[in-house]
Length: 195
Image (cartoon, rainbow, N blue to C red):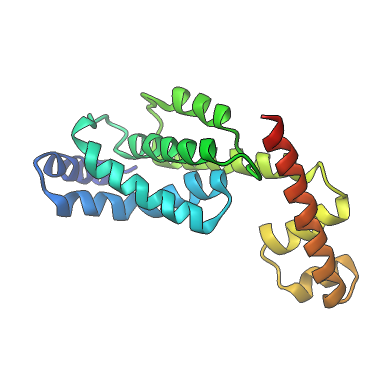
């Protein structure tokens, strides 16, 4: 984070500590999309659940911002830990189809407390970790199914392009993708039951 941005964020944090809700709103608007994209969605795996988790994170930040202490890396590392704790609570309440186990997230929270990394470093870390989890899960299903998921879901290719890459019709690709998602859900469910 540039020095000017860091100084502006410090001023916003001071204002928020003084009760300025607009300043806290600016902080959340700035970091909310990153929390959603890099922390919550990869760990929770569902847009709806991640959006709900982001709302819960905002509530917890508002309730607990007085506990935040300024560090020269900005507020994002603290916000990230709050979001990870929200995700942990959700994962503990769910037993099936998860990429991250509660114990994994507990270790991450412990490692992140007092982190002196900036937001970009943490975001890259979170996205790389999520990608590894997805790759690990995909390695446990039929390679053709894994390829279908990578093409359509991860690379966001059109149905037509993904079907062409698999050398099948679009209708056949839809069936392959449906079976691929079922296989992935099964692998995740078995993993969830083993935890």
